[in-house]
Length: 464
Image (cartoon, rainbow, N blue to C red; front, side, top):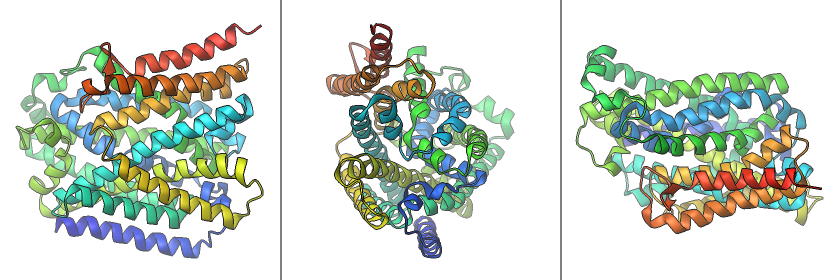
């Protein structure tokens, strides 16, 4: 029953996706990359929400909620702050009418910045896609399907085929189905768990005291190491900017962000709550096991039909994010490498063909990376740090600080990216499933962000 629910949901997505792709007559590069700049506000809300809520929330966030309680929301709160700040720049981004983040950076800083940004996007988003594939493998396995590695391969194959066929126009509109399923599944699960715990008061009385505190079992510095990567990623998130470029107009972009922040706060809080309440119903899980608490609640606590709905919501969370994490770096490879340097005169047919090839190659790379990168929340935090420290400071400066120099922006990207890689390599042996790797007792986000911002300010303020 549970495996059938997951597979049935994927079949529905595939059928609707094929139908939309055929009826939309999606033949142009603009349709494939930015939906022809036609997305209305309600579609923008659902596609932003569906892309952001992924395996990091479903497994890492819920698992941390199981272990630390509502202090796990420090990871989510970083995104909330980022979205709130993005509200003010969304119209400006849409007004630029570009296709990718590296294009914005080239306008301000030159071609080297564009290439560095493209490399950073490909590395970071391939890691995030890998996390989604791994999450899909775990979901299928716990639902009664194949082993996790085979399940990850199945998830990757589905997401690659779906994204390569659909493109932005269809993916964004299908996220209405994904977002609705996601919200319904987690909300109904919360209602059931609260009912079994005697309501909000009963649940609060049953949880450990530390599960209801601000920091739980974490130190303030550990909380900051969860908060900052998400904030930095969100402020410069390439997938988000690409969807702003796809919005109908500037007003639509701002309305989309307003709806997105409400949905993100609600869904991420409910997912962490499932983790915390799940600790009452499924006690004694190890750290790796606790990351699967949402799936364990679905198959072992909820009634069958409600459990099947929660599993369908989990599938929606994984697939929708994986689709976006393939589409964004593929768009960057096509626009920022192929069209910019290899074939500037490429027609729409060539653009779509190369885009589909790039999606397939990134899918294979993500599947391979999933077996090499660290497990659990550490993978998501690594990708967030890579992108947030590497690109966000230079990108924000390009949008709001006219004084920033070309050299400052380029060197800032290189510094953030380089320090992230070096710090993670040096501290990999000391990493864990709940924290990013650290070296000299310092988590990666702090030196990486300091290096990126320091170089940006230093090179700009000391120019002659």
